[in-house]
Length: 146
Image (cartoon, rainbow, N blue to C red; front, top):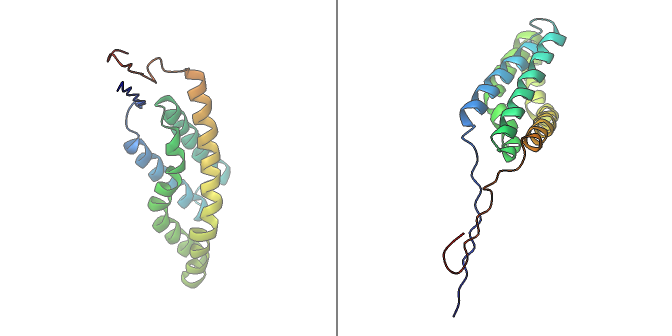
């Protein structure tokens, strides 16, 4: 019997968990400032977009595009308490709890969708500009040589 073993494996260019955590904390700070009306909304919102674009570029450069779908969840984990506190500060205790609950459930679907779109477009663009990796696929033949 003549057996052939084909192994396909792709290695990314490094971990992004540390960068994702930093991005999530900065995004939480931006959302807190937007909800608590700290600073000008256009400047704070623009800063949030720039941070997200930079993180998307990093994901594309390191060939970690699937992390785009995990990033909003990590962002939500870091932002839910500050966002709820900002809602309570801005709208009072009862109103803030209600608005905070809305922001943390239904509002987060929209926020996460926006994050996925921005991160995904930038990551795919950077990855396509970087070009293919020469060693993405290695096929070993029956004689054991690539």
